[in-house]
Image (cartoon, rainbow, N blue to C red; front, side):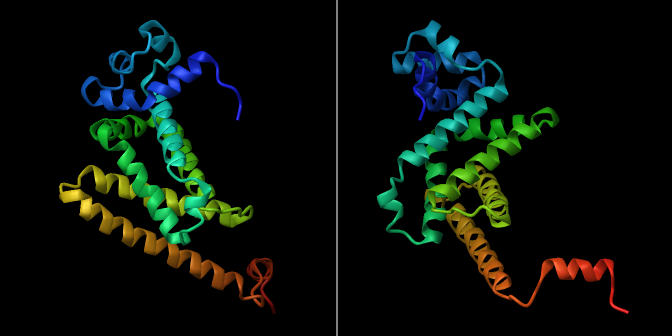
Length: 215
């Protein structure tokens, strides 16, 4: 990991607190100032360290969530879990990390849904899904690398929306929703494994037959 500059260290230190203050102040400079005040960070340095645009502030916040999630799961902890439990725990931990900024997360999703911000939103979602799979031990480099991240990204995104509207105690409705979605992912992975095991089936041969059907 590269050495961070003093301003980068300040940015990383206050990022989660900026999200929490964005609940009241929005994704604005005021949220940065409030976070700096709470953490005893020099205000001028905090202003220099943190991005100014809403989209970049949100990106920085999500990166901080990624880091906090990663710190919560050392390799020796994940090694004791089955793959399903790893994925579920990683997603659930993200929700817990973001809980103090829940309403700010809602507004962040609205901001990222703006047409000019959609590409960034997609990159953010892919980055988080990629990190979760890597922490879970995935080392695939073929098409599975991409399908796993797409499916987990869809699971995480839908769970995020369910969580934002969840009024149940201890988010039991979200937990049940997440369990169902994780089951879907595991079933899909099982199906892919079975499909790959059918050695007699050749994708190239199948496509060739579509192009040049036998006479």
